[in-house]
Image (tube, protein in one colour):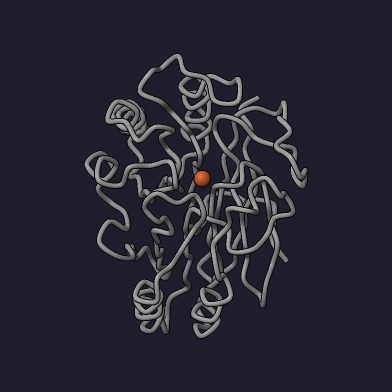
Length: 258
Ligand SMILES: [Fe+2]
């Protein structure tokens, strides 16, 4: 079961905010699905400051057009929060530009950050020129290596693409290809507690073999969950909060700006 209530009071849990699918353009007035991406991103950031996380995880499609300007503005605003940022690319991002503004990420293979008795592993599931997610056999071997020496640490894996269908055809047609190969690797580790992603523009939560599987909403435009076509949810900008307890429990939920 996934716990949807925060741990009471100040605990030793790691408090993380996952921000996803901001789709900011070079032009700050550009609209994404009728919504101003810059304005909504800034509204989403207000949630971050309020929630007081130790880390922000950006799970891809920070930019709509891969432009230097989009990364410059988003990284500048994130820096103002004073919270460390980890980032991974989505299919809309331009990794060679993005990594100049978000250096902590899976730019040369999986990126591992250890925090207390948790290990966060960020993955690049993008393929140049493609919309769907893809892991080469080499990349799967790298992921397996990352998971081999985590005997005493709980592990969270983050990627952009959903490794299972979320029940929305408009985006499930672009999910991670051959997800069974990915799960074959993650199933070999007894320490994986959570796998989280972006891309789906909706809150999604389920469990598989005791692992929490979580899809994050977007800061710019979300669909009503479970709709086959993108159907704008008037709820507005949103992001995921996570509390990872010392015992390996995952508490999570969604913050809305409205
Ligand atoms: Fe995406």
